[in-house]
Length: 424
Ligand SMILES: Cc1cc2nc3c(=O)[nH]c(=O)nc-3n(C[C@H](O)[C@H](O)[C@H](O)COP(=O)(O)OP(=O)(O)OC[C@H]3O[C@@H](n4cnc5c(N)ncnc54)[C@H](O)[C@@H]3O)c2cc1C
Image (cartoon, rainbow, N blue to C red; front, side, top):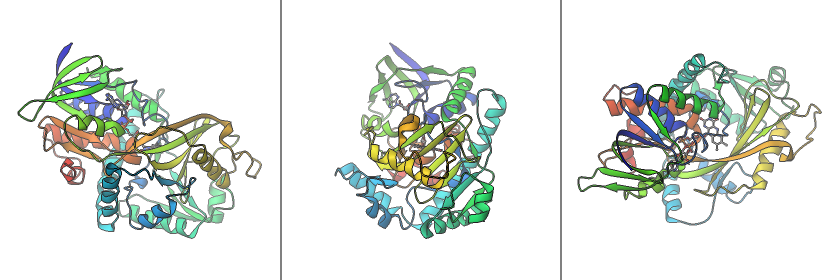
């Protein structure tokens, strides 16, 4: 079957559904294709944070030495798979070049803009579907027990106050009174009161439903396996396992799998899969707010009736294997800082009690900013991918930016840092 269509969005994660909905709401006729089911990629089991206070790119000054130290530690929060490849070498080179303060500040500015927009978006989405969405504004606590962690929390509070994101410093006693589930090992931290959380799958499905209600078409179990280009440098046919499409515009929103699809067009998209894990627990006690344990890079999210702990960034590309050592490190780390058993001890330090273990591949660009913009080489290709650790909290904002660029409206924020030209 060959179907002509106006816009074809490839990928049914949070990025794909938000851009599809945004373009459909602006009068385009959008078809979204997904190789599996909607929301079952990286958008499934993440920590659910919609926290503009974390609008930080992955590369930051001083990370190089830390990454080298962490390289061979099986329980470190960041791990770079040492298997040598040209792709990895190129990615790491660009990553290293991005570890400077000027670049970081510029990235923070635009990532904050899209994250703030997303926070508003989810709040409105939840008010339209209150039964279907567990959106809550509980704020967010960053806690630390080390000199390095405390310095990093303070620096983040200062950086974010420049973006008008308020945070309040708390010393150990204030923290323990504020969040009694914390153990005395914590020495200080920051409370950001305006941050929110949402169940990521519920959010993705709710947006997909709104897209369909606007007249958009979703086709699951459609895997793109080839793309053909005509002599004019435009895509003429997208081939899927369930038939072909001839779209006027293709939006690439397939997360960590975007490079493989772009390669069909002779394009090299520098996105590596950054594997992370989450465990959903039936904890006896849970904190009242989401918590980031700074030095362990562990995110703890209390959802109604369950607790999710998440962490680790392993630059592995497509490897979906599960590392017991990393799961144990996340679980142990959470129990070291939080009394989740009500016993005050480190009881239950293994992930055996997790009711669900999940891993996902964060689509990581080397400069930590998603790619949102038209291809400079293929006239009807538009990128909306590479949302790294912030896909849930930035996708509605990048969808708005993408739709602004596609329809010629005033862009939500400066599009230059997102441009595909930085790689193509
Ligand atoms: C442990 C962990 C915790 C996280 N916590 C947070 C958080 O608290 N807040 C936050 O903002 N972000 C968080 N993230 C990051 C966030 O999950 C990602 O940035 C986001 O899910 C990326 O969304 P996406 O739509 O780009 O990719 P995906 O959700 O992976 O969607 C891509 C889709 O493309 C489809 N696809 C791939 N190839 C093809 C093909 N050939 N044909 C058709 N379809 C195809 C896939 O099946 C998939 O459904 C976390 C990530 C991890 C791993």
